[in-house]
Length: 154
Image 1 (cartoon, rainbow, N blue to C red):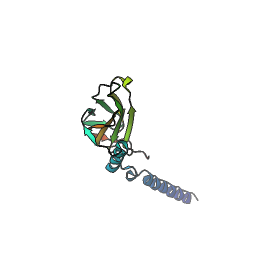
Image 2: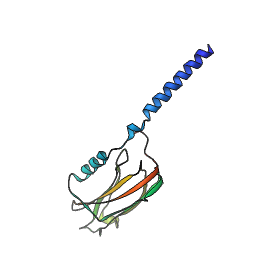
Image 3: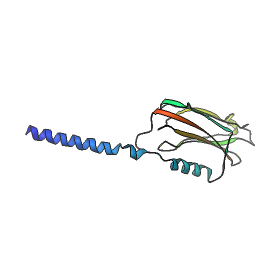
Image 4: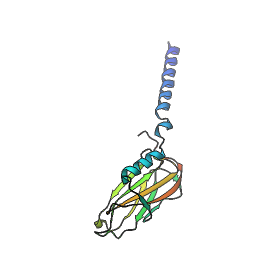
């Protein structure tokens, strides 16, 4: 009796481990560069993006992808006639590429943002600024992540 119960428990345990292995498979959370390109396309609506005005600073080597310091600034006087309307940060290696969006007004004073983000892997990160006239500017930075984050199922 006891041996059949042990056999049953071992089978249940094996099936559970197999099911969890399939559920948490890294293949289900792989990000694609096409997802980042699609997110950028949705943000800009197909309008051209000009390099410049946006400065994105990320450490080139990050030990832990859960706490990556990201600093960005946009060269803008932030006046009623010339200001940054929004800034989108896109990471090509994250399961959800649009990390965050910040909306600004002339009353924001400056277009400087410092925050911490999670990065799933070594990758290129873009910051896309939409100006009040509808134009888009971008800046990018690359980073190497030794301990990945964002690996939970989305």
